[in-house]
Amino acid sequence: MCENRCRQHGSLYNQSTGLEVLVEQTTDVAIVGGGIVGSAAAYVLARYTTVRRITLLERATVIATESSACGSNSQTLHVGDIETNYEPDMARRVRDDAELIAAYLDRHPRDASAYRRDHKMVLAVGVREVAQLTARFAAIRDLYPALRLVDGPAIAVLESNVMAGRNPRVPVAALVSHEGYTVNFAKLAASWIRAARASSAQVSVLCGMPVSAMRRADDGFVLAVPGGTIRARAVVVCAGAYSLLFARRLGYGQELEFLPVVGGFYRTTIPNVLTGKVYTVQVPERPFAAVHGDADVRNAQWTRFGPTAKPVPMLARARARTIPDFLRTIVWSARGILSYLVIMCRPQLFPFLLKMLIIESVPFIGKRVFLRDARKIVPKLRVSDIERVHNEGGIRPQLVDTRTMALQHGEGRIEGDRVIFNVTPSPGASVSLAVAARDAEQVCAWLGATFDRTRFIADHTRVPMDVSVPRTAA
Image 1 (spheres, rainbow, N blue to C red):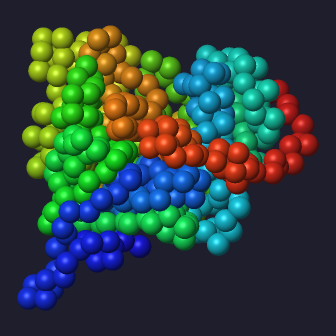
Image 2 (cartoon, one colour):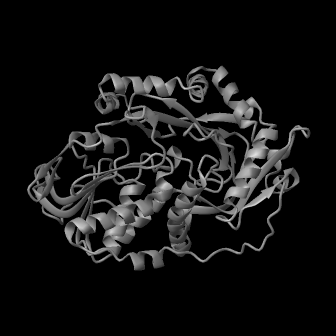
Image 3 (tube, rainbow, N blue to C red):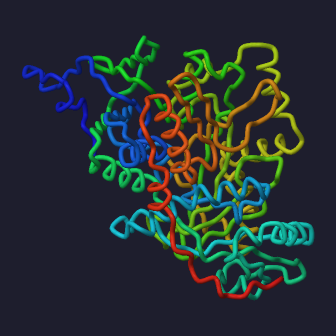
């Protein structure tokens, strides 16, 4: 999959050490970061533009091993139907962007191990949430013809454990769709890399290649990598939390900083607790995901619950050596420091973060506090039925705008002169193909190349499923 210090594009082989040493190489577009977003960029540029030389640089020895790895994310293709914190306009945009990935998955059956088709629902519990969900259904039903509003008995048909043991006096409802996708985004990234390298473009994928520095040059940029340099006419940075660090070094995004949040998951010790995805109603003022449960894409018998969310002063999970890098992303001014205090002390966020701190950090008690949230989905869960999944969960680089002292929602994008920085909190992976298309169009404008949007759209449009099942009210 990767060419570690690629020999076929200008490297020299050192026979005494058995290592290849890079000399200066030249490319049209350098992509920094080989996760789902960087892989999508390579795929779109290679197959749908006239850009001929593309170099992807990934610091790990294998692509998509961090935020795009199965254990680091929700494994959900978000389309806006069960995400109750999306306003209708945002839901429409996310739906249109995520549909590109759904079409790709449907059209590539040989990559079937990269995803699974599931039913999904967002569950409302109690009078207030049921009323909220009913109003939401009225607002978005025309956007999602397959979406249904159902009551308790219909929920029990799909997910018996969601209704078993539930207090019958508490009303429940759910928005249900049978068009859900559970996705292994690491495998999807690998599929895009294969497709890129099968194109007529010259695509070089270099793993084990951290970019230590990037500076401007007369003809573009010079990127410092182990053993040499890469000269690129344009650069697309898709390095997660490090995208902001690269941007700041080049003078962009000076008003932005991070609130890094590490996520975690629990897994059931008994099989087949859930067969699809069950989300809960989101708190609109809180960008972090409400607890959900789903059958793991790696093994459908496993049911994961989460995510937890705890702020940490680092840019990669459990890597203390990234603390200095986080400190470099802080806006060291009175307003920058005050932004953290204002956000953390907001009444919608402070109790939530305090609870998450207990869940993540306090033995014995933390698990029981989390169980209360999980029981909103599966009422009969016991303490012995769940266990913490160790060494899983990723860092969410939540952007903070120091001008407004507020969290910036949605995927983040900073555009400069022939350089793009993608910082991708939720729903980053779900809209990665659309992000890649927008970036490709901009790169082509800079380089005098062309982007075949018509063919791209034609190749990423899926045949609608049968939606003849009547939609009913709860």
